[in-house]
Image 1 (cartoon, rainbow, N blue to C red):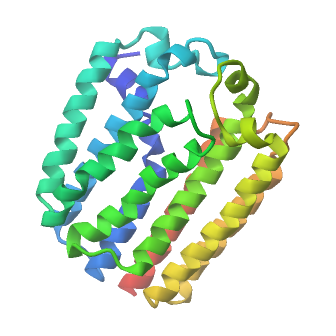
Image 2: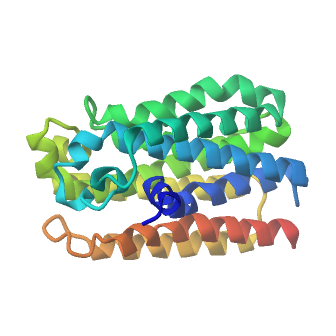
Length: 282
């Protein structure tokens, strides 16, 4: 594995599929059509900088635990393919990209960066003290549609609050399910999660409930922005995806909780953005 591919693996670049489509959704909704190349470029770079620093920070902070967990044994930091000092340099560079990109957008964007940085860089520590850690992650990703919209208008309407809330509950609840397989490890190492607090079965029920609320938020956002039936086709596909995902996992069988399962959740963000785009441009 080359250094470049190791760093790309470390920041899980393919996981951009969860937040980037929603950032673009906020951007296109704000522009009420195709945004300027300037806004598209700087929102994209801001997203790359933000998520790269956050993922690198997460892996660095959790390194001592990842070294003890078989599921994490192939991570580049664990194998030694990259060194902690290299990750620190990547975090600094990524943060510089994020901050400079924010300065090129609506003036309020740079002023809001301390709030963004708090959730992006503090999230890895939350599992040390609260079972709500999953939803701290959700808030970090929920800033994507809000940031995309604010970048153009400098405003945060109720519709974007609904959309961001949907993103927070969607990704946070998915993390509840995915993280439940580590319940025993977390208990042994005094880490917190929904599964350690309420048990795996109850954690899955909580995730299902909040996934239902997330869909209501997506529907509410569509109503606020007066989107047509085209948008709701995307929401329907998202609903079917979530139902299918929940049907695959039980509290007693994690055999299907694979990377394929993990990445399939990206269908939600992709279809909602794509059908929003079709709606806006039609």
